[in-house]
Amino acid sequence: PFDDRYIFWHDSVVWRTVKRVMRHMLEENIGIVTRRQQLPNKPCNYFFISEHIISDGLIRSDNKGSESIFPLYLYPDKSKNDIFNQHPTRKEPNIKPEIFEKLESIYREKPAPEDILYYIYAVFYSNIYRETYAEFLKIDFPRVPFTANFNLFKKLAELGKILVELHLLKSPLLDPPIAKYQGTGSNDRIEKVYYDNKNKRIYINNEKYFEGIEPEVWNYHIGGYQVLRKYLKDRKGRIMDEAPRYCKIATALAKTIEIQKQIDSIYPEVEEELAQFDK
Image 1 (cartoon, rainbow, N blue to C red):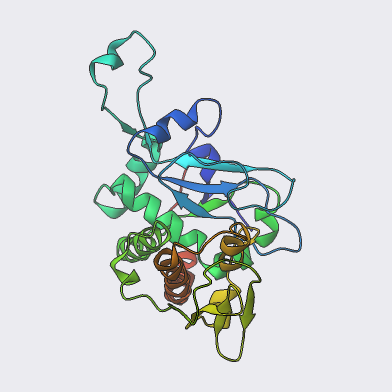
Image 2 (cartoon, rainbow, N blue to C red):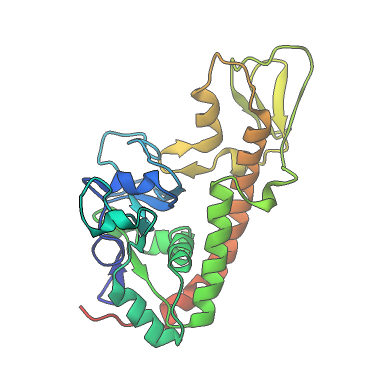
């Protein structure tokens, strides 16, 4: 179903993902994390955001392929003795000029690099997009359908920005959190983790639990991981000393589900009027 109107994320939008790309994430930056091939018989949900260098396995739980991070900005190589050393904080968007030129000609306004990233992130979190192009997402990097409607572009960019802030745990929507850390006794050690569906609680032992967790939040996956379970599983045997952070993560997932519904309510309009890109 993808034709030339759908721009390869890897080939045409962000084109440096390997070799020395990680050094760009040592500076002030942000990058989308995805993979070239998503897994058969699994949801196409391998998308995340990071402000830092990532390790392989961030959003995957298998040995098939690996993640790539696509930084929004590129910084000059400080190790090279050239003109760039005169501008140590200089940066340039990791987006081909042709993309800016084409979008500016369509929108009558040049979009900011951040808005392009936010727009793409919103598209990647559309369940309609994921389901429609599931077969293609399993064999190559995702392609990006750019709408020709500037107002729609801005709306999706706004929703994408909300998602980014939620996933970086920097959103004002995280306060107040939906979850509370409750229980009796003094045992805060993460021992046996289980979900009480009836009372909507996540127990970390027989005494302590997080309440206010809807089943869809408990079961939410990013990549190969069930987020809330994975967090506790990795810390089994340790003291729960980050309860406020865990409550924020649960809140971020709940808000993500809400934002995804908003994205899906308008995503079909993207497909109705696509920007035309030359080969």
